[in-house]
Amino acid sequence: MFAKATRNFLKEVDDDGNLISVSNLNDSDKLQLLSLVTKKRRYWCWQRPKYQFLSVTLGDVLTEDQSLSPASAAVGLDILSSAYPAAWMRGGNLSFITRRKLNLKDPVLQQVLERRNEVLCVLTQKIVTTQKCVISEHVQIEEKCGGMVGIQTKTVQVSAMEDGNVIKDCNVALEIPAATTIAYGIMELYVRQDGQFEFCLLQGKHGGFEHERRVDDIYLDPLAYRDFAFVDMPDAGLGTSSHHGSLHALKQVTLRLESNFHPFVELPEQQQTAVWHLLQMVLFDEEFLVALEQVCDDVASGLWSPQAALAIGGLKAAQQQDLTAFLGLVGCRVQGERPGPEDQISNQKLFATAYCLVSALAEMPDNVASLLGICCKLQMIPTLCYLLHALSDDEISDLEDPALAPLKDTERFGIVQRLFALADINLERMQSSVKAIILRDSQVLPLILCIALSGLDALGREH
Image 1 (cartoon, rainbow, N blue to C red):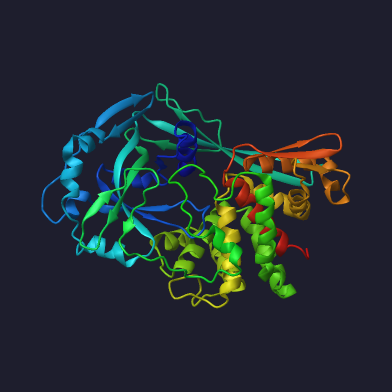
Image 2: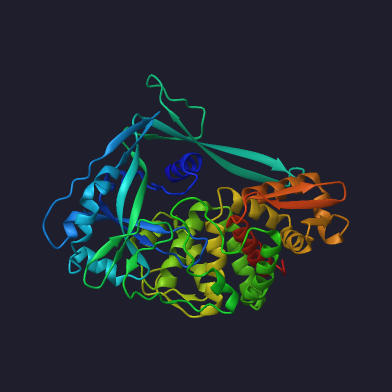
């Protein structure tokens, strides 16, 4: 709930995506200016980077022992304030620092170097609350399609306390103390083999370690998957896709994806049915989906993280059993009673296919997964895939096409329209046709929706 609230706040105040939301309330105290942060680049272009806060500052890992104390200016913004070390960066200290070297033999940096696809960053700014706030989560249940399906959606709201009173007309409430960091900004470092480093000040300049090579840990075949591998997402916001934002471009992508999801189609009927039913549960269980993506990340990279163990530990026993069963069905050999660092991939092509679908579902906005689950129950996934293929060059599909007949139902169309809107696609039904327009050019969300629909269609084709 805290993570959703901070993400929603940044959507309102940070259009450029320069800031990163704090996902865990317990991490707030760790965020000190000039402290070091690692940024892990993910496998697929739609996956946001992951961050880990280190226990040291930049000054702690320099070869010469000299403390660094940034000058920060507090700016009050209603209930929020920001601290920027910009004056310190501009005042000659930047060139002074970059003339020195990092001690690459420092134990903390040694552990960072052992990992792959991680970038060392410095925390340069943060936004903190200036007074106590309350996050409330409202659960709304809507009946659609003549009562056949109940859609449960969640809305997260943030409000400041007034006179110490908290509004209690909500399902869940979480109190945020004053002086809590809710967002922060970083600057990447490019580190050379001798320990010299430079700040990545310009847009498009990326950090990392000299001569570092990215390793494909899972087998991606056929070629279309590689179009999406190792393309950096921005630190915040939804970013842009490498495929320009026209529906025609998305149609070309989905045509290639159809062949890439063939491992699902080729599964034995019993195994395919088991994977399909488990995915139905995943679509309606956000906690399960988050844990599943984290585990898939670690299995793919070959490095087991504390975050994966924490995510699994937060699941109920039945959820852990389902997670283990899912991994076994998609080509991961689980050694113990639940996933762990000893696990190995036994079918790389099948695991890559499942990992692609799971990551796409996990990166979609709130409520999209549950809406996809509703569309699965209503057997509308093939209709939606056909809709994207049937769009003409002027982005219109003919409703008289028998394959699009389900969209004539007002309530069903309302669900689909809401689903597409969350993926930045405006769907408008006219008298005898449907028109689709991408709301914001070159956004990655329409691409993720196409991937999710293609994967679900391939897996559920027999159901």
